[in-house]
Length: 114
Image (cartoon, rainbow, N blue to C red):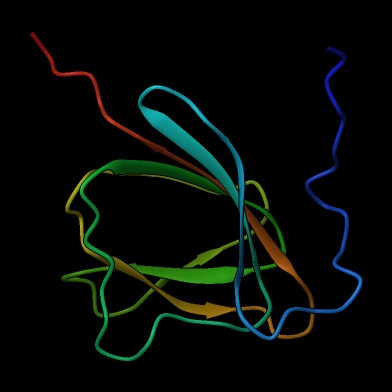
């Protein structure tokens, strides 16, 4: 079988009203997804508290990411990446409303140090 080639930065034909989550592939202990944001943010007072670790990179657009305990979010530009440990509470305070912000997220089970 010959694999398909896709472009993660190809714009949507119609900008999505809600954030778009596209599962690209899944492995034994990881999942890779593309996320397209168009002005969305985490609801006020809500925090993500995930059972798994997540490495994420912003490929296009802009975003503001905040971790619990911080008074202000951190502005992200294309190329910025962060490794978020399991149960590290975080939220997206803002994404660009005038263009697509494309993220690549890898959810995984970290290897135990031993």
